[in-house]
Image (cartoon, rainbow, N blue to C red; front, side):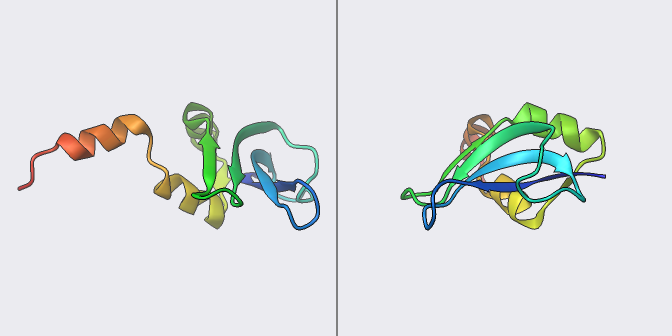
Length: 91
């Protein structure tokens, strides 16, 4: 089974994460299939860069999201969706 989860990179006490597609039973920083984004919690606010179309592709192929990646996806809505929600009339 494939998972979309975080892989830690960066120096000691300076975490930086890659969002990767990887087999579920591999090690956290093991060989991944594809890097689909990055997450840096040390910036203010935290920086998240996502390749939405690749994440959608892998989830359509059966990849599962980790809980943290699912939270990051729900928090960081694409810019086009933000514009749609802002211009939608209130009912």
